[in-house]
Amino acid sequence: MRFRNAAACLAPVKMLIGATALSLAAATAGAVEPEQPELYAELWDEQIEEANQFVINTAIATVFHEAGHMLVSELSLPVLGREEDAVDGLATILLLEAEDEELNVVVEDWANVWFLTAGAADEDEELAFWDTHGLDEQRAYNTICMMMGKNRKRFEEFADSVEFPDYRKEQCVYEYEGLRASWGKVLEPHKAGEGDSTAFKIEYKPTTDPHLSYFRDMIVEAGLLEMVRDVFSGTYKLKDGIRLTATECGVANAFWSAGDREMTLCYEDLLNSANLDAQWYIDNPDEDEAAEGEE
Image (cartoon, rainbow, N blue to C red; front, side):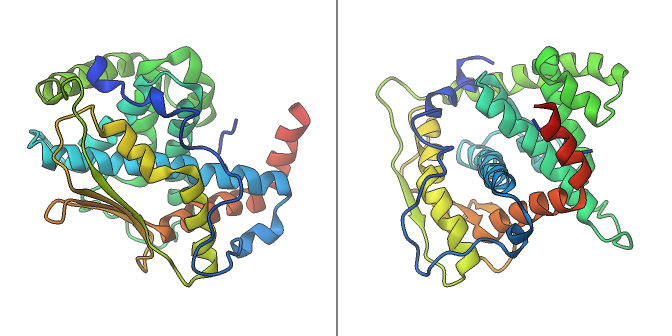
């Protein structure tokens, strides 16, 4: 069911709220006249607004995940186990430690997107047990465990909506505290000094695809890549010249290239999030109408 609704070195995020992202006003024009995703034609205006916010929220979580890879490679951080799992945990902790309600919703939507991705998979599709990432539903439940470990009162309704087991809720408190302490200890030596900053190179590349242009304009207006710069510059000892790029990739993805020192967010990933959310509304009209009636 879809539910709507550290130490100092682990809490750099709070300063961005209100100053940068989460605005969905008219954006800077892209290379072509932007068009909404085709599935939006089947949604109400309010659902479109919520789907767009879902895109921004999942994009924030995605760039924090990739920023985790950035920190690992740029600071030569030790990682025990799979790096993908490690930076999933780090990104979630960074967002939760901000203790900001808008970022709490970002983390909820980060869990939601993995449930939606799992639900959209072909029934005959073989599960990728060999992949560098955990399975989609595993990533969702691991995120929820971090949420419960941070603030059970705030997130319990969300956890109950996806039948998260009670016995795991108790364990998650210790798991979260252990992970937070471990990351705090690893990152502590790399905290930037007073007055330190990092020069990032930011680029939102144009696209000739009108649907992708719609999301390009959206994240330009939200200042998504600027948010990454503002959070991590002056927080950790990062060398100048890191590139933050949003572009058309031909595939729904986001990635960090250690060799190029570049984080790339693909516009197709934003379109994919929008389509997942829109399809949920289309497939669950009764549930969404019930939620409207409770307000």
